[in-house]
Image (cartoon, rainbow, N blue to C red; front, side, top):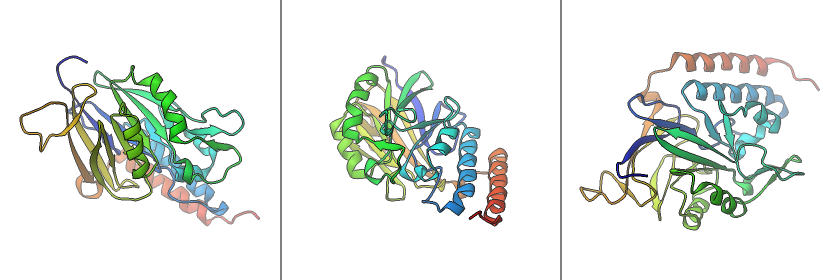
Length: 276
């Protein structure tokens, strides 16, 4: 990697920082927020498409898939999965017959001169029943995948829909993973915790906050919180902050227009009588 630190921001939300290289990601459960009845499907699909368009408009290209995202069905997700403009990640969401991944297991994104490889995992224990889908556990999925990626990646980032207990177990089992951004089953902002060489963190759901992880990268090594490290820098430095979107950011006119149009279409869809 060389001796000079690499500086970048790993952003868990919808924001661009024009002053430094940044990677914008959603860890999962961004597209849909509950299980839908048949009468709500049309409005739900409109919402999901609008979320992807808004994410793209703000510079985001990568989303992990959570179990709530599956409630719209595979056909909707397949329509939204259009790499490289819109990449949906899940390494363990499989076709039931072929056992092949339905979406991208991983992707590589350049952040400055760093190659960041992102892997997506969907919580197999919380998967809704679906005749088209099969799931493997993280214990089955990660070993072979990490063998492929760990020598290519400057940074390995996991977008995980698993809860914290599983993510801590993943970090202990696979120290090659540098960061885990989780879209777990408990909401709220969670500041990074260190498990070995891995940072695990979570930003609150549904676009309420932006989570920003600023890093100074020295290669795969221990993490140190910049605020408490002092002058003895022996590894990668990080600082983390959560920004309430409502209080800290002005509306992006393009995104605001996308959301406004989507809301109108959703209201119209919900007002239409449903066929029986």
